[in-house]
Length: 252
Ligand SMILES: [Zn+2]
Image (cartoon, rainbow, N blue to C red; front, side, top):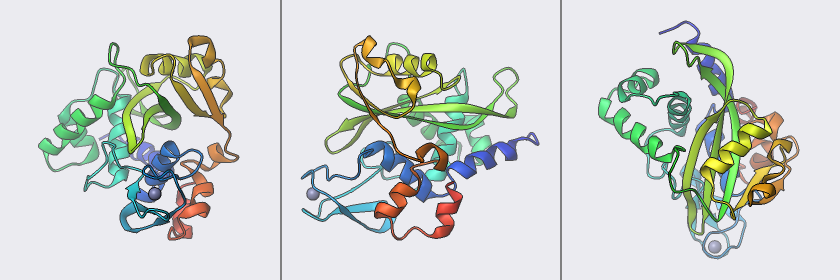
């Protein structure tokens, strides 16, 4: 393993240090305007163990990962996020053996299963585009040199699109982008999402102008969101009282 690999992992660690940080990120993606119950559309929710949320109105149980590839997984989300980052940053696709090696998985079968789950989620030309209301978010993580496959400090951008589905997140698309310019982000949206859809993004100006390509566009500006990483304190303060101060620091 290259010496620079741990540094890159540390960078990922800072962003998604804990399962809470991963859940907050997914929560933000799922409910950018705050929690509402997928059954009765009411809110707010009581936080319960293992990231579950219980609707105060109708007691319906849900979570930020309900309906996603992460549902029912025994694997820590922190490891899933590493896998996502690794698989999406491989230009020509990752092999199961490399996923196993990089993530330190004992089982080749597990690595193979993960890789295929993630591949199904990735943006590829000609796939059925997402539609309806689609949340789009982006996050910077460490990257890998596409030329020789060594781990480098340079930042890569992972962009994620999640289809809204009444009872949970619908289909998800992941891709890496070269940068966070308008050109790159628009390209991702056009590759992943059908025109006519409502695209919901953060306040990043590079997303502006999507209407020109036939999308409806809604932006939610979250103050401090980009500085704090993940979904930030906003969420922690709002509805996750059980999260420790230590975790809040780690997610910065
Ligand atoms: Zn409810």
